[in-house]
Amino acid sequence: MHSIIEVKDKKGWKLFHRVPHIVFKDDPKWVCPLESDVETVFNPEKNKALQQGEAACFVLLNGSGKPAGRIAAFINHEHNKALPYPVGGIGFFDCIDNKEYAFALFEKAENWLRDKGAKAVDGPINFGDREKFWGLLVKGFFPPLYQENYNPEYYQHFFEAGGFIPFEQVLTFRGETSNIPMDRFNKLMDMLGRRYNIRNEHLQLNKLEKFAEDFCEVYNAAFKQYEHFKPVFPAEVIKTIEEAKSIIDPKIIVMTYFNERPAGFCLTIPDINQLIKPAKGKLNWRTLPLVLWRKWTVKSLNAKGIAFGVHPDFRTKGIAGIVLGYMSRDENRNKYPVMYFTTVRGHNTEAVSVYLKMGVEIDRLHLAYRKPLAEGVEITPHEFIELPSHLQ
Image 1 (cartoon, helix red, strand yellow):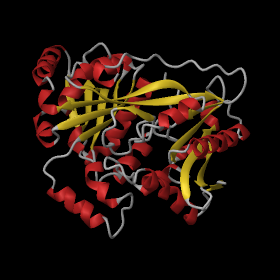
Image 2 (cartoon, one colour; image 1 turned 90 degrees about the vertical axis):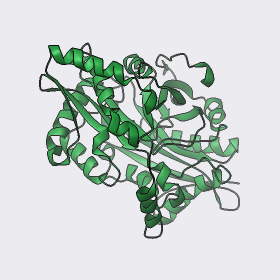
Image 3 (tube, helix red, strand yellow; image 1 turned 180 degrees about the vertical axis):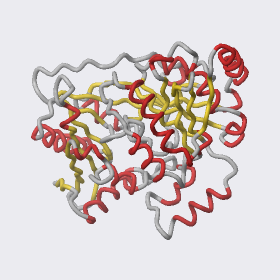
Image 4 (cartoon, one colour; image 1 turned 90 degrees about the horizontal axis):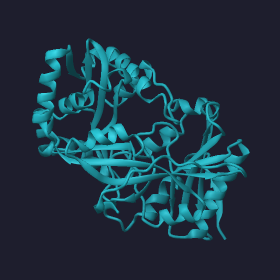
């Protein structure tokens, strides 16, 4: 017989974090997410979604009292006011290859969400930022990027046998920076530069407040029509960048201006999963020196794009190409030989089209699922694109 406990204290968190080490013990590709990143999602002081909703984490123990599975459930009551019906979420699901255990975890999370008023559930997703921990990996089982969901292939059967319906595609594009068509972007910049006042800037930390204001102006205008949209504010952006100073590279965080108005941005970070794998999820006095040594000695890193957007007022002005072209300029191409553009939704046809023109290709696919929790709830998935032959 198994049992399921709710995480309430340090002992519970220890069990929660132990589960993936059991699931992935024989998988050399796996990189353990930083435990601090996971716990931040459920910290009301660091995740404002908890000010508008609630969350719970659960661990399944087998008959011997050993951890064998985990799951989190969460719901944003304020966000649900704008939806046709209340939707909850599940995430951070991990389980050994045991269907009974997986279904028990799903049932526990779903019942918790029903008690909170949810009529449907999305998963596996994150409680908050959509550019991290989002979707189930179903194609392209490569080593995970920083804050990217990675899972065994059998998880897909668990979700689909459990009644979850594929709801949206979450694409990751990969490209060798040497293959990015810079001549085309430079010609575009020259042509538009003769007609308009266009300029590019990378992040300057001494002008962080201005960057944060401009970023919010573009981001909120660009994404307000999407279902999971929540507006961002300058103070949040400033706090996030200041907290991430140790890992960001300002030269790959760029903003493009059209007639001095912020028109488009690309936020890219070094993929530190290449550095933190030996830490096994823990950054402390024992592991940090090794991580820093790897950072000092590594000659190049992959780059991970976490956000890209163009203000609706400038979507016919070629801004997307200019933003990405500037981000891929020579000084960045030499330092980051491979660039990934992540969490691009398949139904965001504009972004997909722009990326494909850059000489990059879809490298892996995550699926976010939705499941009805009440009778009469109809699930209408987003439009899916046809995948390239190597992912079919």
